[in-house]
Image (tube, rainbow, N blue to C red; front, side, top):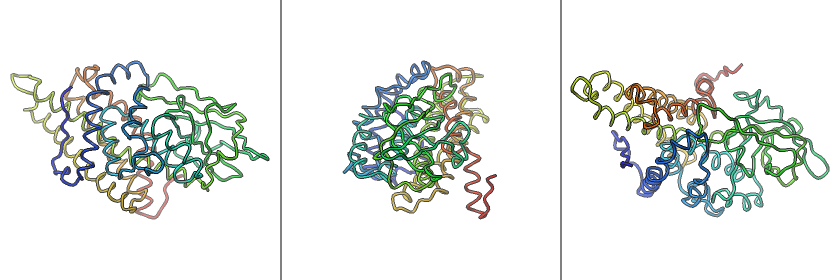
Length: 389
């Protein structure tokens, strides 16, 4: 597997610390040498490569921006973003696993859990000993999570959970689910362990996208949840949405990784594919596509780098995250499509990775807030007028 060289037209590497570059290099090397040689076969079989989980844990890539006192790496958010970028250069399913584990499971436990919950779960999730999932979206409520029907009723010494969640990454392989449900009309977070009676997580099959990722439904039928499994500091839907902000941050970085992979493949192909007695890279239409790719990757790199610096100084807000997620995923998908054009018929076979990334990005554009929902979030901020209806 050839060494990957990322596009850096604006010398963005000069803005990274040595530690940030070292972390990126370690992930890049692992993805190139160990993951890329097997991902196409895994994708074709529609299987998640479970063997990566302990390796990700051992390398410190799970919840890596959370504190060391809970068994995490404690790195800054730019370095965390670079990890997400390189994991998605491998496959969106790989980055999705890490995003869910860190941003949607470990983060809410860290932010709103009891000290006992943090001490028990975070080291196990960080090491990959345990796997988690996040249950917010429902069969009838995606972009409008506040309409959720999943309910919890309190008893003398426990909670009884009923409802269903849909499109849940890691659901069927998770040891614990962070589930959002209404208790007396207020959205609260609960830790639901896989052995809980009445809890099932059937896997969703026959996907055309994210095939190397586990996607599931979560079904709760009179599940009895111990009192101590309530995330005690959760007080409403805002807590669940704050988790989405964390995950969207990682997605904004990750989508760039997929875009870089497609650009690199298309550029090398354009320089070596001969038509009309010369490389197709010499033709204006091909160069136009490559310039679009380089332009949008560079813009995306600048967006997420500044976003990461804002996050590290506690100045980041959800609108900035929406802009980065919306922009980078949209253009990553367009880059994948243009790369597929350059590869022509070769672009549809598994010898080349572009179409796998293209299919995956169709899901990435939809989950954690669709492109249109992020448009409305930003529009609401700019005008002060909420356009959701």
